Image (cartoon, rainbow, N blue to C red):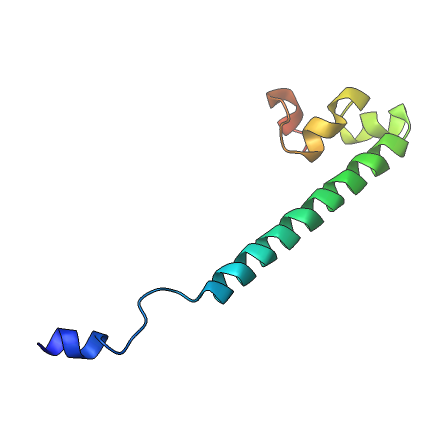
Length: 78
């Protein structure tokens, strides 16, 4: 009886507004992350081949490096 009387007045489901705000915050975070990565790809594409070679990547590896899908030989430079 004690357990029932203590939990009877509480709402056991989380409020829908907190779920909505959490989903909204996650969506905004994903959007800003995507915009930041696109900006990084654009900036790296503007570099000449010598500058890219100095940081250890080739032009074909830019997107892999920015999006975290780099190959094993690239990982030693990043």
